[in-house]
Image 1 (cartoon, rainbow, N blue to C red):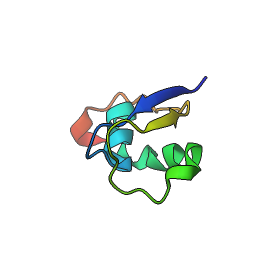
Image 2: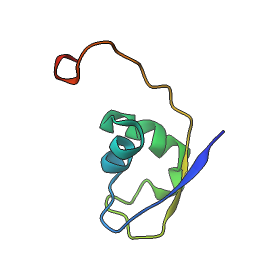
Image 3: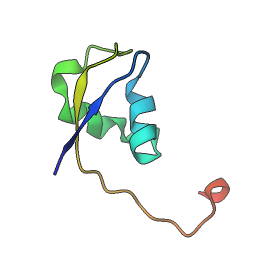
Length: 66
C-alpha cells in the first residue's frame, strides 16, 4: 500500500528517496509514482507525493563495505 510524503522547501528527488529508504538511487521509483512532478528539481513545501512500496535489500555487511 502506498503512502503520502509531504515535501519540505528544498527537497529534491534524491534527498526524499534517501530519507525514505536510505538509498538515493530509489528516486526512480518515486518519480515513476509521481509523473506529474517530473519537471520539478527542487520542491516547494507542501507538495504531496505518492510513496510506492519499494523493496529494500537487507545486507549483513557493515555500511562501509556495502
